[in-house]
Image (cartoon, rainbow, N blue to C red; front, side, top):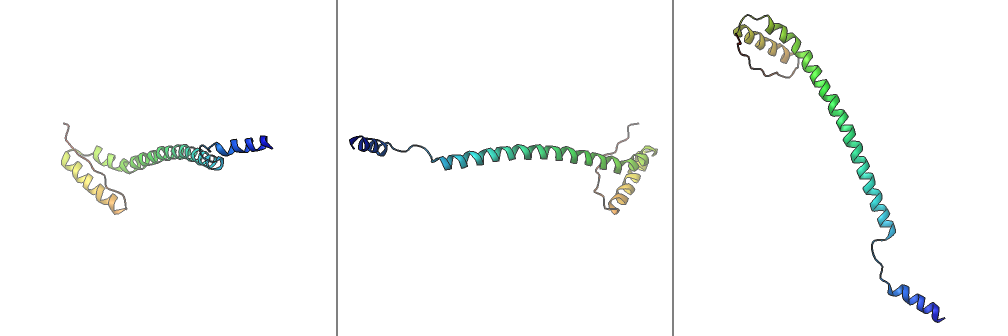
Length: 107
């Protein structure tokens, strides 16, 4: 009987340390899920950003091709400016966003 009392006393006298196992498991699980989801989100957003950049460049290239033809055939800066103004008005009339340019005469 004395051995049972002594063993019972020993376990009662030892203070519990740390968090309970259930709390530790839930904390570690939530941290692992948060880190994995963070990496997945970063990977997806990087892919989306590259795709969106390609789309923006392609849309810009498509929208500026007619303008390049107008400006290429212009004999002077005044004609270029007039062509640019007409192009921007027509492009904005079709619902496009404005393009901002600075024209200069290199001749």
